[in-house]
Length: 380
Image (tube, rainbow, N blue to C red):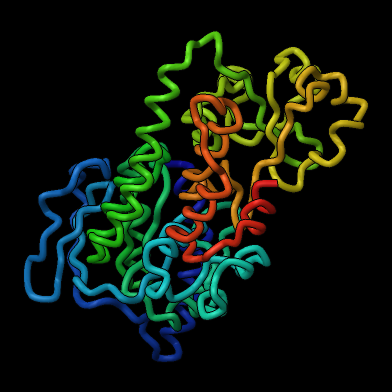
């Protein structure tokens, strides 16, 4: 897959360079116990539990990841490395004590809500993306038993399989992939719980996600199409960066019953710049703005002030802390985002006490007990 190969190439180049250095020093990469990998695809969906998800001998499990790769792993996985921001957030919510390090330096917001014993863990960099900066020496020093990659399946699955197999071979550490989408968040937690042998802990998180999504879908289905709110989601310094309907970064809008005024045919790809002329033509009922955008000045901005949503003061800043409720990153933070946006757009159908809901979410997923004032500050 072209996209996945592009994002993994920087990491592999770094690995090749480090491998030469380590070999010359007589150092071998730390790896898990002997493993065998079969890349014959089985089922790519986390919605189904694999029959191969069973221990095959004492101390070893045979795990089938979301790409159908069958990997032999220790049944007791206590030292886990995430591949990127999405996977590290999900791992933190389920098993914070098993994370061996971060893919980027913990932000000020993370340090506000996460215990110092976690935020002081080493940083070994990100495996993928245009800003891939994996430090293999730091990864090896962290001594993980496994690397867990999570996210959407992009392009050709076979190409992704090839890339992950190559990465796994290079670092000498098993790499597994678990797909992650908003609607199947609960299934992703179930799959991760199977991998880490934490089924009961994962069930609590999965149940919360499944109930939220089921309740939201049922209530949204009962709203007539002509009563649904047309929404524009703006980001960036100008507020004119956006994402189209159906994109990975706008799944919260779709789930919460918002009609995204930006259609796929009008903006190709994610996070694209639009013109104010386009926005005026779309004339959204409600505007939601990402953190650090133009929320504070939009009411006085000559380009924005004549929009009907601005005149009616139907514009809102998306809550954030430590993560944006709608995406950035598109991880489990979006589950509370679904409740926030649905409550904002359809308060009669979604009559939530958002202070209570936010406190419950932070306690369950971030292991942090918010005060009422802290919850109100986050919600704005």
